[in-house]
Image 1 (cartoon, rainbow over the protein chains, first blue to last red):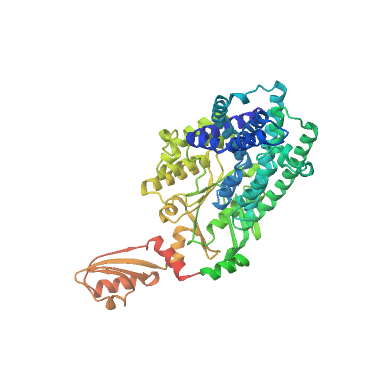
Image 2: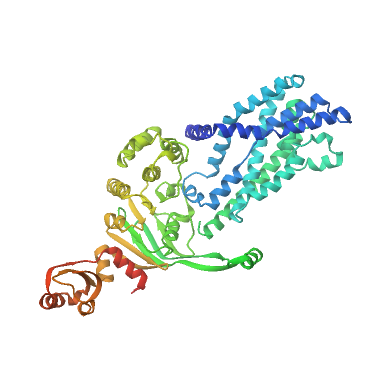
Length: 262
Length: 327
């Protein structure tokens, strides 16, 4: 157990050091997640003129929460894994007595820690520019948000890593992520809160993994009504399914990878 | 008891074929055609613990494929394979902790960090204690003459230093079996010698078994007593370096300095003319006729100086591969 903690500590601290080598990039990466602010502007305008369940302030808070969820759940494993497979860098990693995925996990978690100050700075800047939207969520909301955002990250990581494993069969697995991202954009609540969807559409969408990647954690933070038990169950269900497919693809893929000459 | 056993090892794999031009591209897109390449055919050998064995062959001969089978990266199509008592392809932890694979020019270390940071990851991956880690880094960095380089980012190191850092990372868990694929590729003479020296030292100190491929004959002659020669996927020779010369080079090189230039046609009656440079002549003479030929040369030609040597090993092996004199 102690050995495990040491492993985690050293992996995280090394990858954290690695991430800090990219100071300028970190700021750009944080800024590149500012799509929610643009959509916030659009929806605030819309709220002034139409019939929506959210008012301007609620829209502002929702998209702010979306921004934070996005910052905490960015996943890029597919590009890294694809490069490893295509360039043959996976081979030496396979000869180490640790599943190569843990390096990716460590990289993502460390990247989050390195990104946090930049994301926080953007948040502060936002409140300075738009003080009307400022609010202090209650402690319960913050705690449950933190927990669910970690789960959302895990779900997104597992799904993207599963898509990444297709790199064993095609040189451009990241094309799958492009397609996935398009659906994610609309169904996750990134472009619009699910509350503005027609009820029938929303009922279907809620069975997909998408809303739990953005809408569910964001709603928890702003205190919007959500069915926590049902949402968590669906999340865990998708996670288990993706993990099962992931391990199956991993075994099949390794066989194929070695079949092609590793 | 041998530490590596390979019996009738074969490996074939599919390669996609694409014709050049737009037509070929479209056909390649719509229907891929494949051809099976037999990379390794029926290769058998045994290697004892502590041996350093050179693995020679032209590009595409099957060296890397064999190394990948030995490390467990790829599964043999047929044949039996055992390394350190394990079946490599199962890639058990206990097996992985005993071996290492170094591929020249395939970096494992994180490019933007000092080697020491990346080495810490290796230490936890191989479950070494902090103390063992420190001791081994001290020991290996001395062996590789890298002491003051470990805190500099990898990208700031020279190619030779980078290779040495890679080697340090590969040896940190003190593997008993080392597989090295072109470990000196692209290095200058000094760095090549340093890497060679470190490998020899490691082998002697820890009794580790080393199997290495290299394009530089000097690596092989400096390190290994025994060579495996592979050509078109087949093992064509397994034995000592000197015996290799006798078998594949049943001739010796006679160097002469003459009083005056002699017509090459005349020289050809004594042996194969390898080179004529004014009054300096190099001939290849069959071993069994050597004494007779030398006597004739001395009697019939105006010889000032004469010496007999083995032809350079590169040349012998080059001849084997180009002529395909497989026996």
